[in-house]
Image (cartoon, rainbow, N blue to C red; front, side, top):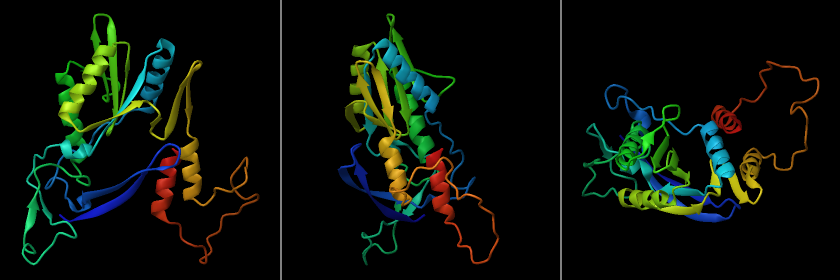
Length: 256
């Protein structure tokens, strides 16, 4: 399969630039089901579970920590034999007829999310955590009446509980297994800004909404009870401009 470079800018919750990122991704859309890969399903944290976790932390006065795994999908193994073209910028007259044999999964592979989550689940279970039944991304460890909880959303983790020693042990254990970045107390997760005060936890999506308005060019729009022109009549006129299907789908997903 082919590959390409993806260049992105990572931002802080306040909108300032955090870092510039370059990532080599595989063109997984050329893979064929049943030939190049089998199952691809992998669970992601349910928002209801995240809300319950925040509520527990607030009522029980538990700390909330956040971890981030760098290049998470590169930790997943490959069951199949996969070959990829040499990445753009590295092709020379000496290697023009050669390809790369991948030892691990790359971003873009159909099976990479499943491979990563499978590896992560195995590692956390070895540390004594039990996987949740209602939400498979929740892992819990009970010891001497104390509890330590972890929830994962792709490569972002939230840790909480009253067993501070176990939480510290889990952090160091994960750091040995993966390249983990300790982000300290929970501040930004899934587009939500989280702030802990004496009264409890404040959750806001201000930055997420502003970014959404900026992307659609509606940052200076006026408020409206119903965001549609009054007395609107549908028309099938040929001169109507076509809708950008990709952008429409992205916006619906973000609104959901």
